[in-house]
Amino acid sequence: MKILIIYLILIFYSNIALANNIIIKVRINNEIITNIDIDHEKKYLIFLNPKLKELEEVKIDEIAKKSLITELVKKKELKELINFEENTRIIEVLEKSFFKKKGIKNKNEFLEILKKKELNYLKIKDKLQIEGLWNQLIYKKYFNNIKINKEELRLRIRNSFKKKKEKHEYNLSEIVFTENENTEDLINKIIKNINTVGFENSANIFSISNTAKNGGLIGWISEIQISEKINQNIKNLEIEKFTNPIKIPGGYIIIKINDKRVLQDNLNEEDQLKRLISQETNRQLNNFSIIYYKRLKKNLDINDY
Image (tube, rainbow, N blue to C red; front, side, top):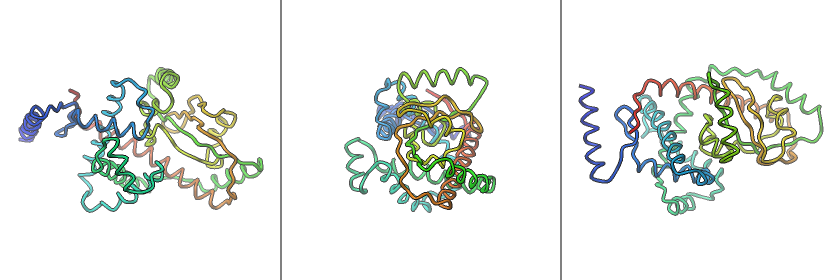
């Protein structure tokens, strides 16, 4: 019976698609991704990372399709667990955060930008809600599994204070990827890709971090908040240069320095500790998110057309 229902749904969508010149590109169980969805996603991803326009059209299509598959897998799981209609308030918070990151003054300016870029506001709201609810789900599911050694972090801060008076902060981007039986080949492929199409576009293609859609952008972060291992790799790195792959729990990270400046803030130990705890919490939650997502995706029937 279930197979018959899915078949009828596909017939229904196929008839609509033929009538409207819509092409089904991916099917995930009884959900579909069309050429129209991919075109909108491409515009959205280029809005987040304008350098994507430098890639070949076929490559941008692949990135957009991969992004939509990720979104649909998350949405399917969320619908099983959460009532979307009762969780709309999160959109306002996420919109404000989004405006701040993109330097947008208010909602009216945002709507004007979307209009010029031919982007659908309701679809963007849906994306923000899915990502926000997904992060909430991961937090609730795995928060008790997070392990943070506060004394170790406090010691790192104190040692950093002792080393030198002048502190720096860096504007960083990242590419995070997991290791497998072909890790060396993957590393060579990523490095070649960075040198060919740039770091930001390579982050869109290869990174599994939640920063990938924004070209891997992390933003400004003080050297105190960066692990000693990564500090050693970036301290002598010139602006616009990137590190070799650095081993981290569960995989590797490549860091690029976008900018660098002397840290002007008064360095308060407790404030720095709070930031470090927050950063380490987010890092571990991101790892749990990747593991959970992969498990969900593996159990779904995903077909390309």
